[in-house]
Length: 243
Image (cartoon, rainbow, N blue to C red; front, side, top):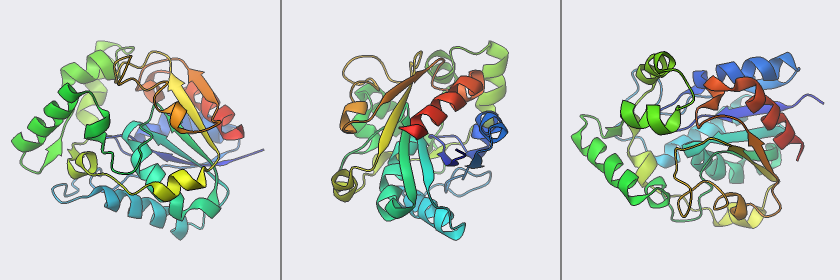
């Protein structure tokens, strides 16, 4: 049965980064929406964009299009706005899907859930910027985010990324109601994802365990497998949507 997917990007990304995956989903008859959240569009102001702005935008995006029975997918940092928005969109959601994503709880920011060295790096990058934003260094991106791509592809994609408004990484949400609702959820995990190191700060089992009863679906590739393995990722999202 065709689904309606709302695909929410990760930090420093935008809606267009889902395009390779959307091609395969649409070929199967699914509807696909790919919003770009505040501060991540070309030319967007970033300095004062807050995490709640991302949540509000996502809620408005879905409501203005009157989307219902949606599969709301969050990648990486996208787990924050997806979790926050799902409380206000609960009656419109058929399933939440977190793909190699943070599953935050009340009071937890991305900085809190990252390894301390990453948090320190993000703070330093924001302080050194002119607009209170963070850009992933190419060395980090190529070695741990997109290590399964050729150097040429890495160098093509990296300059297309946007810098991330720092407040969206340093702020937290009130997610008590999200936790109480326990909306139907699935977790998709990229098998070769190095963006978070294995162990205490790894994606799994830490975040899937926060989704009681959620199936965990594995897909090949890195944290950026929407570029390097889009067809298997699309298949994993369809499987995740089915629960």
